[in-house]
Image (cartoon, rainbow, N blue to C red):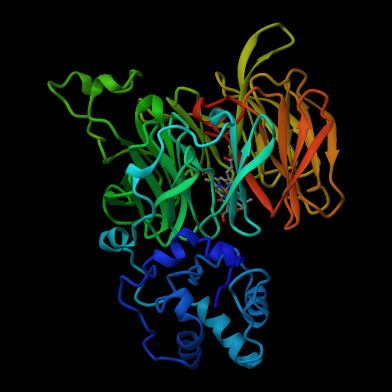
Amino acid sequence: LLLGGGTAAALAAAAPSAKAQPAAGGAVEAHPPAAPSRAADLYQQHCAACHAPTRYGAMGPALLPDNLARLRKAEAVKVIAEGRTATQMPGFAAQLSKDEIAAIADWIYTPVTPEPRWSDADIVASRIQHVDPATLSDKPVFDADPLNLFLVVEAGDHHVSVLDGDKLEPIHRFQSRFALHGGPKFAADGRYVFFASRDGWITKFDLWNLKVVAEVRAGINTRNVAASPDGRHVAVANYLPHNIVLLDGELGLIKTIEAGDRDGKQTSRVSAVYDASPRQSFIAALKDVPEVWEISYTKAVEDIPTGFIHDYKQREGSFIPGYLNPRRTILAEPLDDFFFTQDYSELMGASRAGVGQVVNLDVRKKIADLPLDGMPHLGSGVTWEWTDAAGKVRTVMASTNLKAAEVTVIDMQSWEVIRRIRTRGPGFFLRSHRSSPYAFVDSMMSAEARHILQVIDKRSLEVVKEIAAPPGRTLAHVEFTRDGRYALASLWEDEGAVIVYDAHSLDEIKRLPMRKPVGKYNVWNKITREEGTSH
Ligand code: DHE
């Protein structure tokens, strides 16, 4: 029983893995319900082979309430009855009655008892080495500029396409794990890249050899992954278990850190983890406790160019206290969506209730309130230098709002809102490039306007153009080429496309057919931490 939108591919998306992988969840004991029910029996009979007896997922995705949170139960019933086109998920309408299907659907939305566990031993046992690194070429195996490649995550059939950013053509396509989420994270030379799936799989891909090198399942319900620029430290944020997993560059386990408050009274889901390379550390957002964590991945004080460790530098032969351990900044309330200043000394954080705050990571304190409403999506933020009417140049940050139809522009020195740019509807992603006068914003959260991309002039802070797909479609998530000349947007449909626009004339140049392209990521923009894109 393969639920959740995978394709055969996707599931085999597990592909490099599908053959070789130990059934995820197979490494742990099954947890049958206390009183085995008919639904549980049916599950074991029809579903367990692909989704694991534990429901932790194997070749098919995990079927646990948290993992299914994004799938309505009525949709699950339909998938069980009819299967999913182009996937290995067959329909069971001929074998099971309507009541039996409904019972299975109900059952997979109930928690398993005891609570799911994913131990260090499970992580280690799940690791798969797909290729021997010694057999890999140390030069790209293609002619395209390796620093102007794009990765396009295609959620329709759980694939990733690799585009040549000069010719704007695909050069490779491979099956990914089921339901990737968050941006892939590149090591500094652009060769290795790390992906995270919502089911906890971390994939290391070699862009020069176009091969999946290794995979490991770091959690059961995962948010995202971060990687140090040298690719030797990888951090994974998990909702389930409540922890952060630290891996080495080969995806070997370094350690897990249980997330929770400093008194050990309450554990917490981890909303996301970010690489703060100027500080040589990972920064983690905790969802359930009011703390921000910083975990250093270097012991050497000299490795850290910023002054943030001045207080520790005084200590003879000191190791940084946060080396592979959390240093806590205590807040008044949890913040779980972050945007960082370019040197990572300060972060802007928002709670899901819309409270915005600025936290200084050196003094480890809140230093300002952000006057935001709705549900700011600071993670979509971009920055640029803006000249005001009086000729004063300021660094500004702009981000979308998941509940309000606006792009909010904030002065990064005074932390004041300097403009609220009205948009067609609440938006998800905002994107620009240093060389472009424009920023592109979607209205993805609005049923009426999600087909419209709006173009904001970064000088006037006005919307100057709209680009529309047919109503009912979704047009969202832009990424620029390395030189900023072209902007690529997703026609976010199962039979969708990446549409290439001239970033100056805003004319459409070409379309590349894709299966529900979600995010796209340009190597150069990511490794140089381009100010107009996510990091
Ligand atoms: Fe995302 C990035 C959180 C729902 C597509 N999303 C992120 C990041 C966070 C986040 C913290 C930054 C991490 C990173 O890139 O390493 N996303 C959340 C949520 O809390 C939310 C609202 C609810 C949830 O269930 O997780 C959510 N996200 C979605 C979606 O529904 C999207 C549109 C489709 C999907 O595939 O899940 C989605 N999120 C994305 C994408 C990025 C992302 C494409 C990377 C953007 C980038 O350009 O870097």
